[in-house]
Length: 51
Image (cartoon, rainbow, N blue to C red):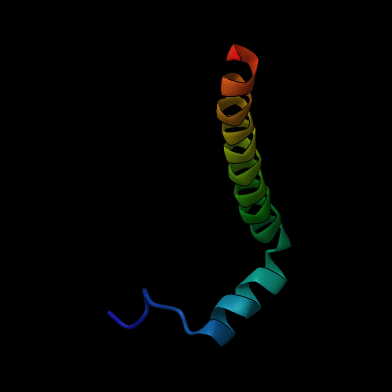
């Protein structure tokens, strides 16, 4: 089943020929990171507000 595992070259070629997948992956990564940042900011701000 070597067909299922892509080499990096094949993966890179796939992304170059299907750039919308790369955009979607990046958007998901950035979206997750942004959501995590907002959550951590809220949790860090709350103790300050309590004082």
